[in-house]
Length: 68
Image (tube, rainbow, N blue to C red; front, side, top):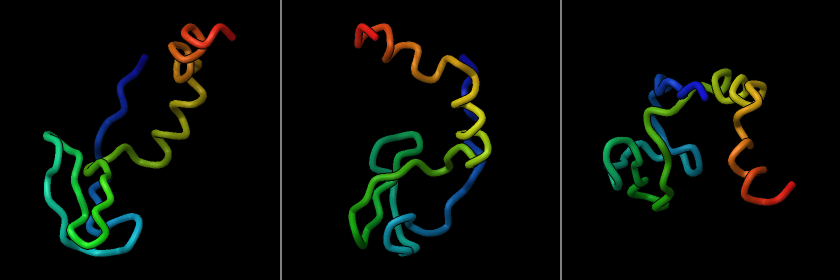
């Protein structure tokens, strides 16, 4: 499975739009200091995320564990 590149740097919280956040879980999970939302920053671009669904390996482990 191809790893996603972390190249989309966010300058505001995707939920509330605040611009102040700090690292909560290194190396790249941050917490918004206004609404307390956790998010990845930087994160994969939306095109990388969409492409990963077409690789066939996205749900491979889930299918194996869920007996589908």
